[in-house]
Length: 476
Image (cartoon, rainbow, N blue to C red; front, top):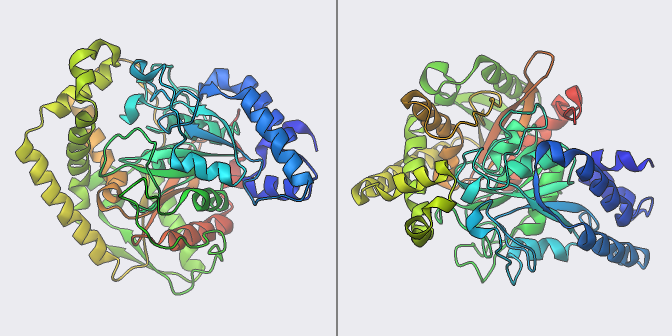
């Protein structure tokens, strides 16, 4: 096989070749490192590339497999890690000057779990500063969308989305507070799942908002996403918020059979007048629903009126909780924050306690409404974003009241399931017209701890639609 072709293979394809010893992990890592050298300067997806360490681990994996010690589908597979997730002996920066020299002495549980599968950490991925969600705030420079330079790759896991889409890593980990796995997956034409809150350990992860933060994979296919989630999910005694419940075999659940499944399309998030969804996004989501219906699913509309306030509620809570994590830095080192991060943190510190309390009460009402809907439906469908990835404005500061209001309205789309703790997955469901197509995305949500159904519905759609084959990979 031509080495230059290796990075364009899905995890499932790479795993088969490695297991059969048609290629080695050394071949794979060398191919990815070459591609990083060629492409990363244009995208700025990586903060740290672990060239020597990755090659050493690849050599060990090659020897293990040759001696009959194949561990499974991630053995020898290069993975990128968002730079708020601790890696032993490797700096973990949170994309901030305040953390640029921090080197953890232990791996986060998710990293330790990946290493047990034989996965190889290729490097640490860029992000927005402290996972705030503003695409221009990284102290290590802006990450670009590989579909078009200057477009937003999705936040806050900017590097996870860009690197995975540009084939700079085979799969990646992001962290989703208000949508930071699903947003990059949507903007970069990928599959990304926010698991149920408490499904995946957060031990060794620099938090953004304790009652929202969730680690999840961003991958090129739904099956790759399922394989990656399988490796990191499960109870962890180091994280008291993980649930001690069985983890299903997510890959085996990908039957593609959705006959008789009850699918609800969230009415409010499909209405251009209510939440501002664009026509091309709306049409692509309806087209996806039509495909599922053709596969035997029972599709109908469902009204969730409180979705229209979920963005405001989510932003109020996360803004307050973020500030409480490191209050000394804001007081003692404000100049070391990016301007936009500093403004956001200071704003969060001014939110009155009674407002936070009201937002918590509203969160309970939103969650109740969503859980009631799941008594009737197996999954809920809606857009991941209201529009295709936009052009990033590199000017610092709040641009206008209209911009701020639109940001809150956009938060409704992903903030809904951040509030409720349900699993939610974004998968590509089409592209815009024009010389340079941009990805559009469908969001699929399920009952708490029912990631298997969510993944299977996404897989059924992905296989039937063959969307990823329509435009291939980004131009990079």
